[in-house]
Length: 177
Image (cartoon, rainbow, N blue to C red):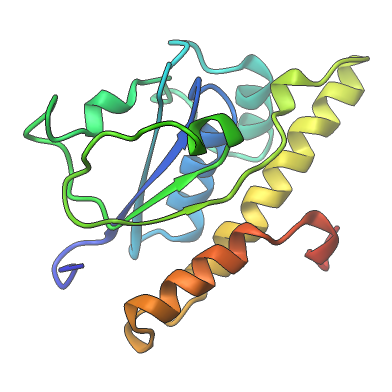
């Protein structure tokens, strides 16, 4: 991870790149500003960002104008020689975790940080909004833990263990929950 002159690049993956990975991209770009640059993509991108995700992010004062659902091919060396060198790749949905990923530029470390899909929530608008808020809080918790890691003090094996541990944290582990 040669990152002396640039922020570390983080890619969040989900199948449709419409909610969880989009929220993770926003959170990382806010929480990790200066240290990390986040991107998101999907293995089968829907091409549309979920309106509930947009509403939540707007409510939390995120810029949403440039958000878009994009295919992970944009970040693959085979499809885009100009793709950013990645330092970390995190899957945030169980489907994407089981898929064969493209070859990423760089030698990114990866982990699975599965979050229940809020776009599958049913019920009233309030119940659906709550599912999106829960997904956001869990992502925010994990990304905050990640950003607090002493990157320079951890060897690759220790860092991988910490990434995997973060992926197992739940809302119950979150003191704010």
